[in-house]
Image (cartoon, rainbow, N blue to C red; front, side):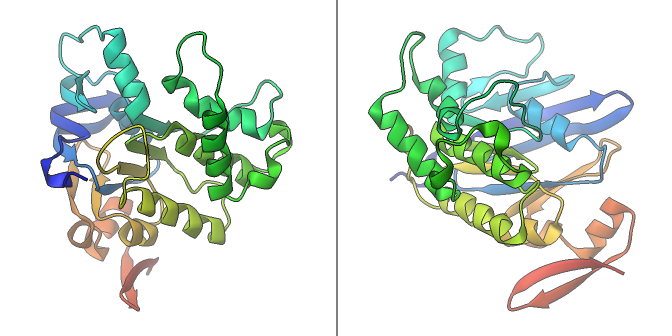
Length: 277
């Protein structure tokens, strides 16, 4: 396996500026995500965390600056027209977990997980036995293998969230972009899911790419962020941002300023947790 130090960044931005409505999400963001890194994005409600994530996923254009996603230049002015090959490269290597999931039509849990294989199939291809094996393995990882034949519309909120994560694992991307991945999950599944993502950025267990995976996750709990992510990006809502190693960035002082409420840090067995004062 190649060292992550010798792999190109999965995300690279230069002077990236982004606005939504009257909110200045970030100004002149110079930042990169390397293979093997796990980044947490933290900020108050409404500062544009999800907007930034959809931009990083290539689903929204920034107002200004450069964005390179999985080796494809997508955020420059004037905006380039991506070739089909470039679009396929992004679709295979970038996995995006949205905050909300919609199931307008009835389908089974297994069929929903198999949607993750679509970037790897030709236009008229059907899923193979190998694709189904990959989907079953992903369902097993999130403790849903026993529900493979269930109608997706009968799932609880937590089960549906775990299915969305299984669909992402079925895709086998190199870059995970997660918008509130712990929504609807109970505490045991929150820990289990974050442990899974940690494992997937520590070892190359995906056959569709070489090298380590990377992760960017919008999270709400600073304790989970500092426990499972080695880097953090803070968004203050006025265009200002702060990025760096989680141990240096996620502090009681920075979080108090970030959330507008005093917090203090508690250390237990080398874990750091933050509670309101």
